[in-house]
Length: 264
Image 1: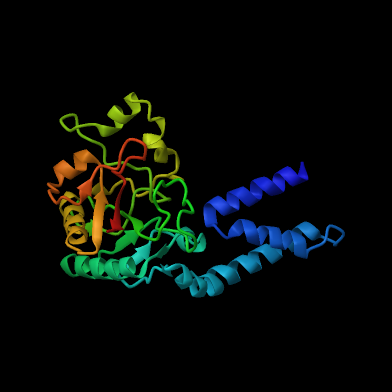
Image 2 (image 1 turned 90 degrees about the vertical axis):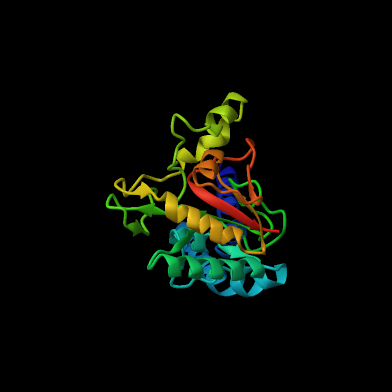
């Protein structure tokens, strides 16, 4: 049973952080089974190793694999510390440069409003999956939040979910419902992120069509960007006519809680 528990913890840490599973195994090997308070010591060793690796070692090794940590600015921020602590904030240098340019231009047009990023990629190994995403495995992809406004129409940096995912800007009765179509075809996972919100917050805020359209168009004007994924009803509502705007497919999950874009 103990071995099974270690395996489960190893797998979960690897799925969430890429490096956590290996560091967990090291912490087990370092502290012998006969040691006093071994569980507490193992936890302490793991936390220490993990923090050192995440903030000092990984950022210096990742460039060998063609990736670097997202360079945050005053106008480009992670939705929460989780994305940084879990090493889900690595991209290729070209995408890093584009992120800075997009966030800077967007803030110039919308004073004080930041571009908030969600999942990007892990630091190492092309093809290593960043679950639950299907394609965030090569340093080229990133998700960013939609833009919202207060009831009085003033733009805000607030978001509607704790995790950054799962609170949808649903289609109106007159708009095409891609979610219903995909689920009717048997793609049960299509709206699964609704279970991953970790709680809904800021319930007073509303989706800003104007600002989200502006952000999307700034992204699309970047020569380095090859594709942008957003739900079909939002593509039409926001009048996004650029050929880079694509449908991600029913095998993925819905994209009316965030925007996904990627390098060519």
